[in-house]
Amino acid sequence: MTAATTSSTEPRQASQPGAGSAAIQTRGLTKRFRGGQVAVDHLDLDVPVGSVFGFLGPNGSGKTTTIRMLLGLISPTAGSHSLLGLGMPQRASAVLPRVGALVEGPAFHPHLSGTDNLRRMDAADRPADPRTSKARIGSALERVGLTAAARKRYRAYSLGMRQRLGIAAALLQPRETARTGRADERPGSAGEPGKSGT
Ligand SMILES: Nc1ncnc2c1ncn2[C@@H]1O[C@H](COP(=O)(O)OP(=O)(O)O)[C@@H](O)[C@H]1O
Ligand SMILES: [Mg+2]
Image 1 (cartoon, rainbow, N blue to C red):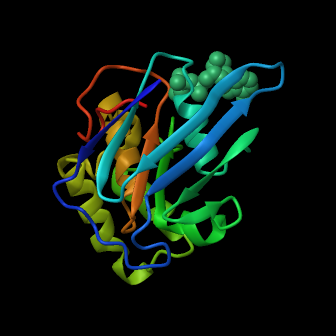
Image 2: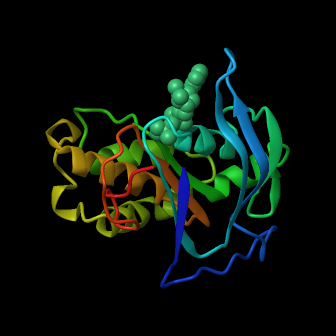
Image 3: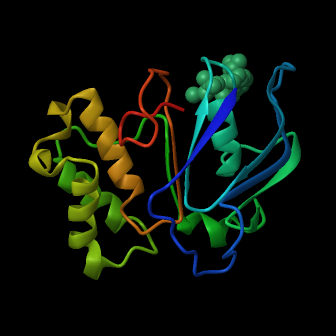
């Protein structure tokens, strides 16, 4: 697995605990699955705040496993990591509300429109402010180019539109770190919504 970083045109200033720290830092991060397979082997990563970062590698090279460890969805076998300067998993409850994530397939209701799916998700998101919900949903859809299809049912969305809606869901709240991972590994341009594969 290799990693690529480009600088974002709009670096964001972090203004909460952990400000000034790396968005992601890993030291010796390792995952050995039961059965003995080492999926991620001593990964050292420093991803600066304000950068666009991608994992590149063939199927099975450990990209999704890395992302799942970063989010605390699975425990590393060895090593340590922090998000926005806060150690994981100890500070998960403080840091995860500040992190947008889409790991492989998002779960959307096929019979609801893009807007209505995002409304449901936002209503279930504890730190989300209901007073700004409508505006945040509108701007997330606009950011990923789904404004024209916002009222269309999810089941009528193309694969690319579905992936864009997943990114919109990750952008619903102002986040300092967003990451996506998906099962298929098609080539695409990094940083373009719906086109980057991890
Ligand atoms: N839950 C699991 N149990 C056992 N092996 C797993 C599990 N998840 C992933 N793996 C293995 O770890 C390796 C890395 O998988 P993954 O991180 O999904 O790769 P990528 O996302 O780069 O395609 C693969 O060989 C995969 O079979
Ligand atoms: Mg994967």
